[in-house]
Length: 69
Image (cartoon, helix red, strand yellow):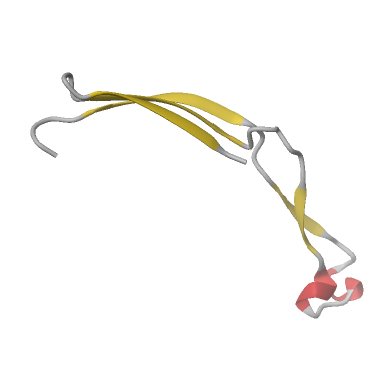
């Protein structure tokens, strides 16, 4: 789950935002199992791989607008 909250200051042309990805810091891996690809364990030397997802990330962003939008 990701989250973002923005606060606009239109007179100044500014937008401030707080954001987070992987809000609950869920740890998981997406398997690339060889049998799912039609391969046997023997054909790839018995090596299994997985794609590990990013940990929780949070931050602040500041956007400035110039002129009319």
